[in-house]
Image 1 (cartoon, rainbow, N blue to C red):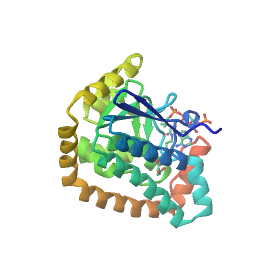
Image 2: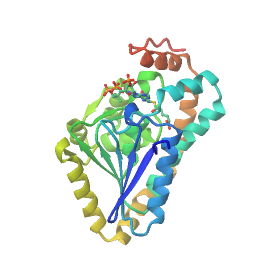
Image 3: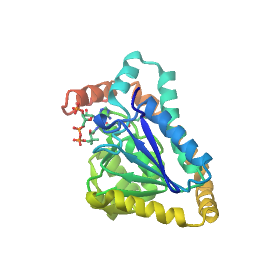
Length: 263
Ligand code: T3D
């Protein structure tokens, strides 16, 4: 039987969703997106679960959209298929924000592209010192998605956000904490223990005010998030059709620097 793309484990009131494509640093594909949605649905349905934790198997958290999958989409060039693919990612973001329980990103290693924005969509972020955060989109000729253009400037300010988006350089865990991108950074050997400790603290809190606070804070900005995700989608459709995106994908696969010509 095929290994599940997202593992769901429940311990006391904490549900852990583990992204499980470790050989690809948990790069996002259809099975992983669907697994995340199913896991989040289960978290919402189960009255005994009070906290969800999203983490990655192996040495990565999530390397963003699967490059091979994007090559296939680009070769077939179906804009409707690409729109569905992007919509499915944005549905995960929406789900995380709407679940009336805390959702914690426990970032064990590299988080890149949509993987970084998945972490930003969560309510709190705890990172291992081995984690890195990369808005890798510009490196392959794409626009940020998964709500990244909404979340990142709100956390770190517009100037820093543009630097991170445009240069596409990895931000270390320590720097991420310094600029407000993550709440907690812990040494790798204490990562599991500290994740469990944070989740247990949240699980012990009174569920009703926790839920009402999340709803209250996010309701005020939900319309803006929706508007931003729609404009991300339109921008991404344009980038998807570009020659520079073809070059970005090719360069990643050939492990060389891309040469963008503006086409
Ligand atoms: O829902 C949606 O999916 C929407 C669409 C989203 C669009 C995006 O997310 S665009 C951004 C896509 N992601 C990237 O461009 C990031 C690509 N990866 C990296 O830049 C680096 O791998 C990392 C910074 C994440 C980590 O670097 P490092 O040095 O620790 O690892 P590595 O050696 O680069 O990668 C290890 C393996 O994972 C490697 O395979 P190999 O050579 O050992 O066979 C590499 O090809 C593979 N891998 C890494 N990222 C991806 C990937 N395979 C497929 N897709 C990836 N995104």
